[in-house]
Image (cartoon, rainbow, N blue to C red):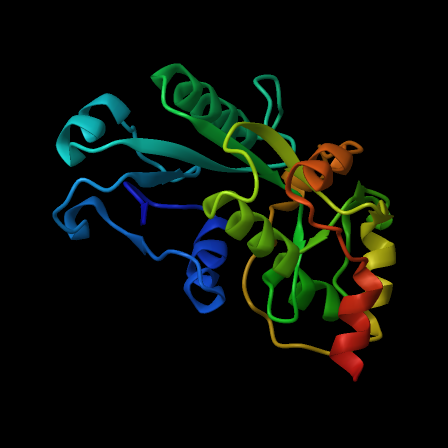
Length: 226
């Protein structure tokens, strides 16, 4: 079972919500945790709370491991405060002493994902859309979580969950345009300020660790227009 001790920032809520339909565990609050001594997974993100993991561990009184749902670009010297906060949460989790798995997600794309919806509306992009990102498909991110949670991938280390095809935002917008218009599904995800800080990621260790072969953005376009 996954225990969520505080608010989660995107894309974490969507990823965890998708797990039960794929045979994965459901996420609950500490108050909803049933009695018993089974081990649990604590899921952390950048939600605006100060988390005392030691006190929480004493309260749930059972073995636990930690899943940090981070984002690409987390760094102590990042310009975006959200990325600096993510780094602090990653470091805090590592100091607890429990098994920790950190996944840094690149921008995620799916037919109903906020970023894909935004791009399909052909928005104006800063710097003409020259910023380069390495989007992954949301389905591949969910599959990664499933393999980690059920033991097919070792519960340790940190990995960049990013696609193998770096593309500029302008290129992604042109690809999304082929899928046709879409309703506005909210704010940029991740924020444009974060994407501006992205550098080339290293998806190789992620794919070797869990065995997920990342699909390209073109597959999403084909599904959308089929």
